[in-house]
Length: 423
Image (spheres, rainbow, N blue to C red):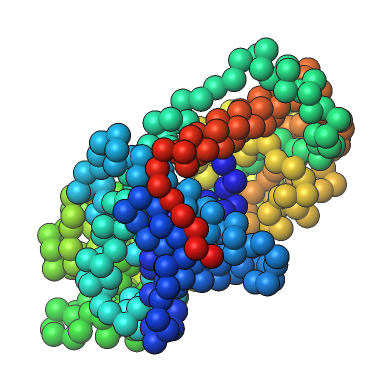
């Protein structure tokens, strides 16, 4: 499957609403009982051009985008024929997540409503059916291709057939790290808590929560929306925030809650099963140079212990505050060195295999921390081989097999299901 042109039905419908509403639509394709309108095609082309930084006049691009849209409609028709089912809850959850993503992209609910010329509640009603169709098509593809695999023989045959066109494998690095964040000083914590308690008292006395959030909250992502965080599923908040927000009743406001970001007060606006819509007011707690020096000293000591022979992995499990990697011994995985994030590249570019960096500042999720990085393995650029690169070749061979089967399946659908392009 050509992933570059595979775009969701819902996305087309949503962005089609942004085009000139005064222009009379014409039908550019018919697939079974489904129509594709020119406004939808134009929207999809605009999205594709924007995402891939292309010239919208690139020859053949409109035709390729339209064919991708036709392919998705063909899959939808087959999903309906095969009685594929998605539940109302699945549709609602995916629709909520998609709308929330759009809100983040445009900046606010108000801006999204302005762009579409309708309130959020109506957007959800209008596009609920399109989301159902998109999920049906995706589920059918998952059923057909989600369990595909390749044998060792298939990988070896693929390698022999294409080894001259696989190109050079870029230089790769395998990294681990130990990460820590400076802790708040007591004086700064006391000042911030006193200020937020004053804000809480004002709200209890009748002040508008949203207005106070706009005035005082130091969360740039939500303050302009009155502290509204949108609908968020369990597992997306930091631990301290999540334990409180899921313990509140609707319209209940919490006592001050401290997280690594600062101190918050939280109001639960709405709860839908394992998802909540909350708003908050955040006051940052400033960290001093002494706070930062303290964590640098701790990391430097851990680095010395590792250089003296202690296991870096064991130290990471004990001391790293990166919860996603600590249980893995600090493992960050393997990456092409040219694809490393800019924040990592200067730290590891000059490290040799087995070396550990000095403590380096690292911004993560809006919080400044520090880490030491171990270069576990450094593999120079090289021609691919079965012995050294089997897992990579296995994945390439699997994608090749899936694409080949997907293309054959689409050709079969085109022979069974009515479709017509009118471009």
